[in-house]
Structure formats: structure tokens, C-alpha cells
Length: 246
Image 1 (cartoon, rainbow, N blue to C red):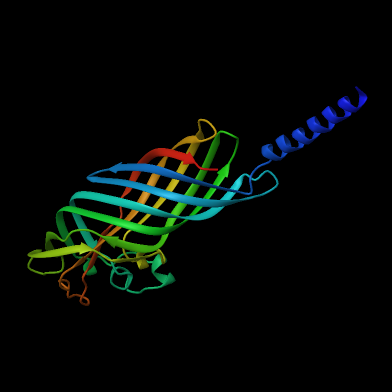
Image 2 (cartoon, one colour):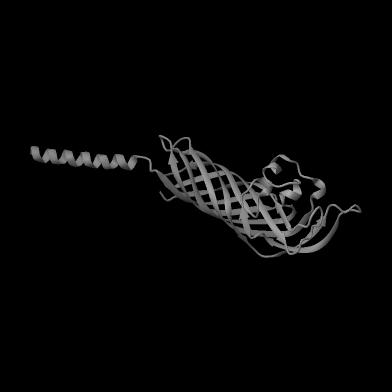
């Protein structure tokens, strides 16, 4: 009986050690999400796979990377001149601190403009409790695709008044995060708060800031230099669900 008791005690201690290991925070986590953002004449639908490593004594800070597929759907929008060197008069970090030069700004009006973007992304999240968290994520680099759309170029620098001409454009193919107006292509970013329902499922809500860019078939803008890139930068409310894989 004594030997049986000792064996049982050792077994329970070993099992308890396994349970304790299971309760320890994992050093990393990965998840998938589905988000919908809605604004004035703008709808964004995105899904992503994200992986993050945990930091800190309680493993509450998560930082990682992922891939996001976004669909941007806009209607009745005026896409304005995009390149920073035209909008601000210079490119690079200095453009961040300068105001737009109004006389350099032209636009292209599209009745509909749809873009799909697949981007590599960065994510940061902090869990304040086991239930509540907040975070930020942003697209870094990727590609965009979508149909060519008919539009109307509007020259805002004609001294006799705005003149227009028909044109066409399609999503700019290459996306790259630089600095503000220096960005290229279509990019998505989110600020959010999350609530964990159970071990696997969470919900989150926040705002998305979008760069959605089209390239016209010809360089329709000629002042102060030729240009074929035009964009909108809407901010929309967003909400969605998250499924934690582990």
C-alpha cells in the first residue's frame, strides 16, 4: 500500500507539473481576423493572418508580422494628386512637416473605384487584462490589383476655371510604406480595442486609415510636372472578429 501511495503521489506531482506548464503563457501567438470598415462612400473588407511574439514578465506585449488581403470599394470619389514632391514641393521626411501646395493639386473623379491589396504587415498589441487589449497594425509592402475604371481628370490650375477631360485609371500595382505622402500604392492601418470572449474567439473595433491609389493610363497632370498618380486617404470606423489559433 505504501508503494502504491508513493506511485500515486509521484504520478499526481508529474501531472501537476504538466498542468502548470500548460498554464504558463505561450511565448508566441497567431490568429486570423475578418474586419469591415465603413465610411462616407467607402467600404473596406480585410482578412489577415498574424503571428506575434510575447514580451515582458507577464507576456502581455505582443509584436509581430502577418499578411493582409484588403478590398477597398469606393464610389463618387475625387482622387487627388499623390506624389509628395508635387503635393508638398519635396519628398522625403521633410514632406511630413509641410502643408500641401494648393495650386499643385489636381484630381481625378471616379464613379466607382475598387482595389484589392495583398500586403505584408506589422502588428503591435497590449493585453491590459485577460479580456481587454488594444493595438495597432499597418501594411508595409505588397501588391494591388483591380479593374481599370473610367474617370474624369480635373485640372484645378487653369486660370480660366477648372477644365476636365476623360481618362482612365487602375490601382497602382506596387505598395510601399514610406512616410505619409511619400507612401506608394494602397495601404491599410488600424487602431483598435479588443475583447476576448473565450480562449479562441475575440471581437475588436476601432478605426482604419486607408491609402487608396490609382494610376491613370497617361500622365494627365502637367503642372508643376507630369503626374499619373492620384489617391484618397479615408478614415473609417471598423469592427470584426478574431480567431486565435494558439
